[in-house]
Length: 68
Image (cartoon, rainbow, N blue to C red; front, side, top):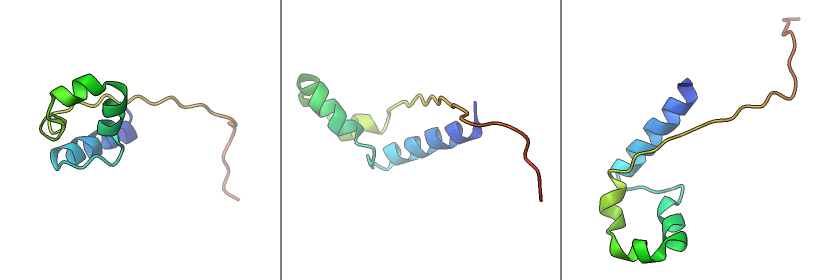
């Protein structure tokens, strides 16, 4: 796992444990799965959420790096 992905996962886990949802996962769930949203207590479940972070990297330019 890339170190940056690990840090993002660690940050998301911390935010969920303290009840902060700056990404808006709850809002996405509410709009896409409203019936389910109404049947749960989001603030309680969010603390135990599991996050799977994936990254795709494209290199537009590659070559030698020199110090001048």
